[in-house]
Length: 463
Image (tube, rainbow, N blue to C red; front, side, top):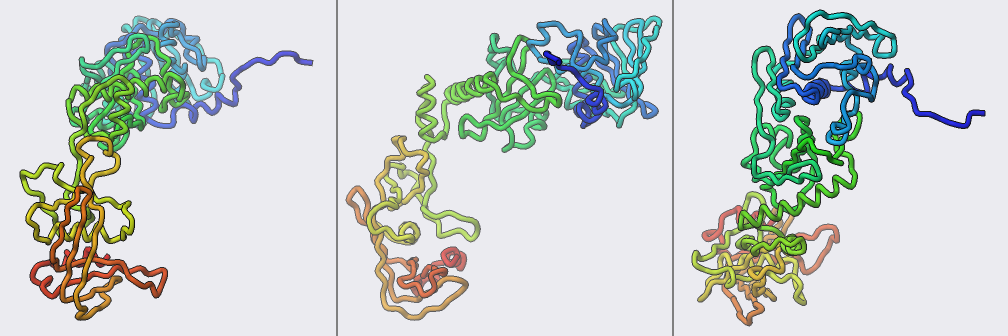
């Protein structure tokens, strides 16, 4: 009876190497460039000729050829393992293609059967330039395919004699977390370069970019609701617990180190906003910054003049006098006793077309800003509509259109003021409902509305 078990890699797994490690051209390019960089190369030259790809680097070369086909093993030292956690895939990324590899005075020709365990000889190669060369068949490794994976590696990469772009991933302003093995920089999105934007996949897409020495991983995490910020994380080559999920290495492992990184990014985001000096963060995030020891000024006032919004056609616009302070405006209080669904519409219409001795300007402020001093405004607490004699009615579209002799709207505010005025339009919910599934609002108009309002002003309230 067997008393022990032992982990091993089966030949069946090796037979699937072409599907495990090389699903995409991008994956093959990344792996080969990363291997060259880990070997200390400063330059990589790629040529496409006669359906063959040749990749040459000037790195330290291959010390032990027996490691080439040792899946999961490599010549990388302990420091490299702690800094980068290489998967040990190596040239297996090119399986099942035939590959000729030369380094120093040795070379091998890996055939399709060699990937699944058939022995192959190591041949003498005479005098070979420093580094390693690989020759294999593949779809073209042209500049467009290679450049995006070379730009942040620090390598000088040329493709068919055309040099790839080279960029710093972070600026000199990045904060270096030495003991964690990475730098963090918060940037305004408008300052990111085109390669950052390539990996972000659009302005409103993924916020966090993590650069694993040229292999860039993007993920969604928004520590603050400021859509103008982007976050760059650049691994330094020091030991780190940030890990890529194997074998594809296209996602981050969700471990304690990633949660620590997110916490750092949150603090750095608030510190960036502090340095900027202005923001429009919700009050809860303003408080959160203080909990983290970052003192921010109050948010800039965020409000819309008027109580209605929507796509074209627009409602009648409420205008705000140029010199009127926000503190003299009013928020709509939808919680007072007897509130009606159309009270905000009528308060808006009163402000838009009514006449007063002093300004009556209702504003819309999101409840997310409750807590800031500028959001603590007097409120519209009650709205009443008085109608004159009915002159006629009809059913255009799905609402009731009613002509009346007169309309007067009155608004009472929490600071004890009353604003009332004759207007040419008001909106009320139906008093009776003949069909419970059909609740059409009633739009009331005076004959003078023909001269004072446009058709779009009316149609907005007809649904």
